[in-house]
Length: 314
Image 1 (tube, rainbow, N blue to C red):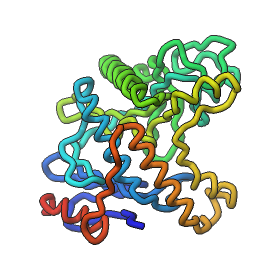
Image 2: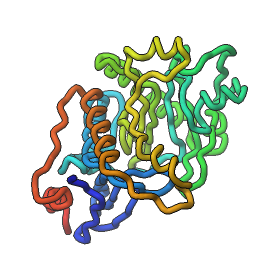
Image 3: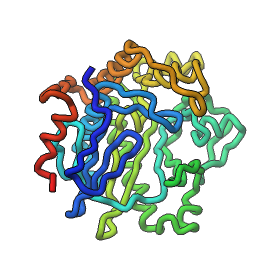
Image 4: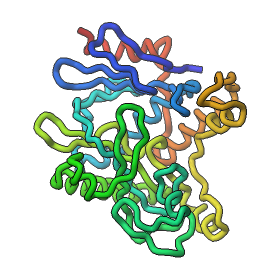
């Protein structure tokens, strides 16, 4: 299996290793972001999934190009299938999630809060009597604090965002406009592919001139929830979950066999890794309508990335 597990190049300056990405800040104000094949969960690296980094980079590329008329993004160049060179930004301290359905499983999801009896959340009020996975009257923004030090994100209202000085009113207005427009474009294009874009996360930053720029990734299988449209109605009527791109085989397998926050991670079977890789590839093809072509040039993925990044070496 061809895997990009790491991408540390001493020839590049200002190295920063994230959970799944390798980052280098260049003197000209740009940043090299390399998506590895590492799979992160439970605040640790579980394994590597072949072609995961290429799938995420190329899916985001598809969406960045399809939405650049709505919102400026950080992309400068794609020197390699796993690499984007982008503008270096100051990331805003608010994480933006746009939701079109009463869905989710995390502690900050609107379905979780709704089931606890809450009706007022994120500065909005939801009506009584809604059911799991029901479409919302209109898409909503559910912002949370973005904890950079490993803390837990917390729900925010627009009033809290501006009142605490996290964003100015002008920044919040601009960010909200961008997020809802991006989500509308995403839902429209997904529908043409037989998909429902249920919810998604956006990350924004500001450039040297203070302009709000879309960063990170957009509408990828890791940042978004997709359902197969033809599975929705029957699942909703029966109280079940619509069919989605379920990539959590590895996470569920690990959680069934140990305490993943404390114990050593058991060796993960190769067939499970291959199955997860196939789901990522299937998601790419369903979302973009393109055939996935793995870039197996050069001896290894690491060697290929090194070759393609050579022009950026000091």
